[in-house]
Amino acid sequence: MGMSASQARLLSITARLTDNENSGQSVSYSKQRLADQTQQLNAEYNEALSATKFTVLTGFNGSEPQYTDISYNVMTSVSMAENTKQYVVTDTTGRVMVSEKIADAYVTSQGNFNKFLNTLGYSQSDIALEYKNKPASSSDSEYSKYTAVEEKIHQAWDKYFDSVGIDIGDNSQHSPEFSYTLTDDGSGFAGYLQQTDYIQQTDASGNLIFDADGDPVFQTTTVEYVPKYDSTTGEQVVDANGDLVFEQVTLAEPRYIEVGEPQYVTNTSGQYVLAKDNENNQICYESTTDGLYLRNIGGIASKVYNPINYEGSTPEQRELYDYAFALTEAYLRSDVDPAYDPSAYNTGYDSDNVTTLTYYENLFNRIQSGGLFAYTNDPMKAMDGTGIYKYSKEKDKSDTPEKDNTIFENMLRNGELQLEYYNATQKEFIATSISEDESIQEVKDESAIAAAETKYTQDLAALESKDKKLDLELKKLDTEHSALQTEYDSVKNVIDKNVEKSFNTFG
Image (tube, rainbow, N blue to C red; front, side):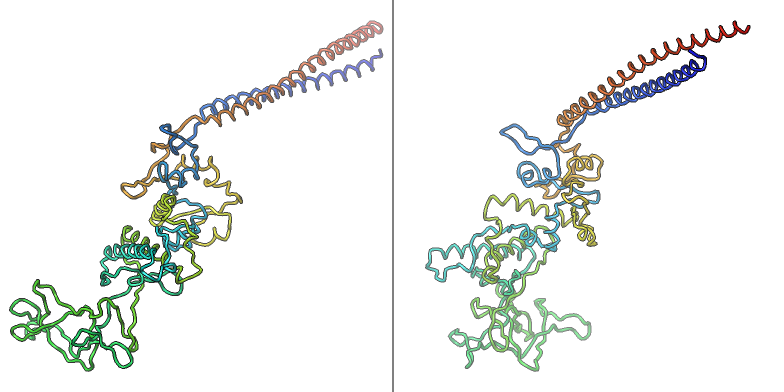
């Protein structure tokens, strides 16, 4: 072999050896990275083996407690409230997290519990009859059922009136037609019949007097009584019995005497004082119409209806008002507004609905006291300025704690969301937490562990497969390196001998 050819061959082999060594080094680095990945995979797997989750008591199978993985829908469901506790989820400011449907119902109701229920398809009314079906004759076998309902409605309103100190001049005639009604615009407002405005005149036999046109003739007076004051001291004058003395004032024109006005008499000194009976009770003018409630409007006697507005200040008073109103609406409104159909609602008359109605009442009251928020994928709602709606980018709201259980649990763990449960004794929601609530327990997350084990096995197999390929690549490179090294030594030896021979020839 010529000197130049041998040298060229040696250079080529040297270059190939260098490439071989570089490739071997690269494969070694890859094996090291695989070793690091395997170590990380082992660490992640060991950590996954200790994974836990929260479960909550959702009921009993006989005496055996049943636990379910914690989630927003599980925690806030009606069945949870029925079987164990009613929970609400709140943010750090105390606002209740609700579904968009609940939020819409509350916004629509404008704080009216009955409207809130109606929007959700419920009514707390626990009667099944409607006034429009009431028999005309009291001899009808069904008639008593309707009068019993009317009595129930009347008593419901009486409880509310008593709670707020309203006296509507009740008597023994108990029926909605007498005492309570609705406006004829179908909007569902309740009202009550007020006591007689004026007193109808009677003749010597006690018969009511009417004029030639058939209109009632009312009693009138030409005087009024005002307290009498001492001109020297400025104090009110009292008689020998300590009763206030009044002065009689003549009116320019006669006026009707109103029912409930105080009556006045003269004492032994001829002074005007309030009339009293033998038991020292004040005597007032009473209706002569025996329960016929009248008002003179343009000379015509008419019934007087006053709207029943809520005038209470306590949750108990509001509850009485809302219940009485719901009864009235279910009984009378369908007669006033044919478009209203009480049967379209799930009512308290069906015992299966009682738990749900209680659930909504508790939730409504909690929202009233602390506010609410909900997730929506409607950007217009999220920008309505109320702060009630939070925007969800995903159509199915899968990016929210309402739909994603992992997000929900993590937010509970880090305190972004908080829990309260309803205490029936205290009649309010009490703060609790996933670590303190006896109905919530932290357990091994077997499904997460199983999933981690499957992932670990698959990932480890993939790494081991790559490692075997790298081992084969290294073995191939080692074999190639040995062959190149042998060839390199052989060519190098030939070149060395040629150089030595050349030196001897020319030496």
